[in-house]
Length: 152
Image 1 (cartoon, rainbow, N blue to C red):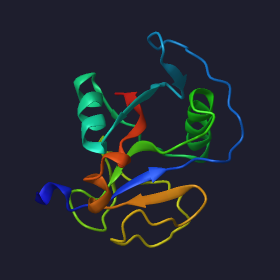
Image 2 (image 1 turned 60 degrees about the horizontal axis):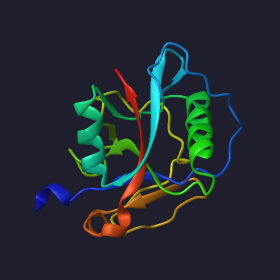
Image 3 (image 1 turned 90 degrees about the vertical axis):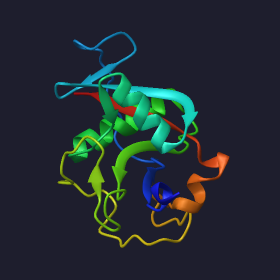
């Protein structure tokens, strides 16, 4: 099971300025922000299964490239999940330990985790807005999370 020997970032988003959610030119149940369409999915899946579902619909788990986009994602989560539980995003170091990449292939050009170092401790909490889930947690059914994805 070498495919599980990597870490994923999970956001537990608590704060942020509310952003108005608009459909724009996006399909029904999708929301528009800066020319991209986003969808919150309440079905609980593992990171890998959520990413596979996103790819099957022509997208990927969400990548975040600005503070404005992060605030939009927070508002989207708050709109559907008032408890603001764990929500998968597309950031992982699946390809090389310690080298974080977005699942859509875009580069990490905005870091919202305050330059903290990530390690292999399972389910470690680092700040009020971000958590690390390691391979041990991925094998546990309790790590199934809601997720957000965007269309290409």
